[in-house]
Image (tube, rainbow over all chains, first blue to last red):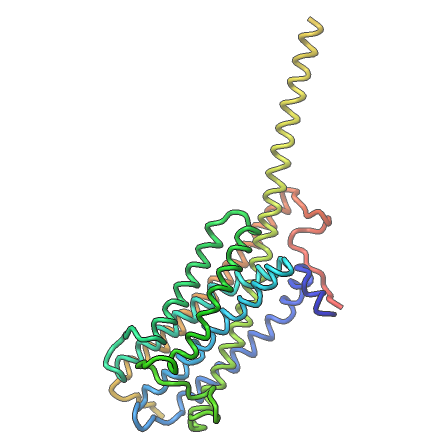
Length: 263
Length: 65
């Protein structure tokens, strides 16, 4: 099987049917290991047990940006190659990305209250992630608002690529501005600043959440392909009904004129 | 062994519970959506509406070699 074969929606459905159970099992196992390691991780000398929120907050924050990155690549596929699966991928990823972003904001807020003394601060990192969340919601609304899927796909792809400008702003906001949020401690020059007892559970949880995203994304893409299949069949059904009622009316009119001629 | 979460246990537990709830909602929504779409496709199939390829609307190939 080549990569181009996956561009066929029917082949893609067959692939998802085969890989989804394995992906789901791998996700459950890794999540269980990650949660066990998170529970056993020691308290931080400054933050105490609240450091355990990091094992949920950081993977969700990473994924909030990663999912938009996936959607941006898919948007290029929509605009450059006009491939239908590219739009399916972007549309299916949006609600999942919104959920991860919501969790990043919520868990960050719950972590901030005991550590910073406030649930929310309008600093660069928190505000830019809130903007990302609003952009996810905006994109989902756009897909729902436009009836024609191809028009919706192009508009959403442009909006996604414009919104990708926010990703480096989120990443470097802690370096460019004076923020309450701490600077990067894992992906930074000079290696991670975290001790192994925190870093290993964090990486396991990050991989587990990434697998969760891949599993949910493939399942949501499968649903979107089926939804489009339903839509095209319903349109086919509606056009058949319209055609048969038109021909029925036409034949009745033809019979009426024949009868009038005969009279 | 009982895990001690200190004075901020409610913040930690709420974070994990919220994550579990949101992930459960996502999984539930995707599973219900799949059931709904396959049910609609079967309904269309029964009413005689088929794809241009002639395959059943719910068909997927068994092999992808």
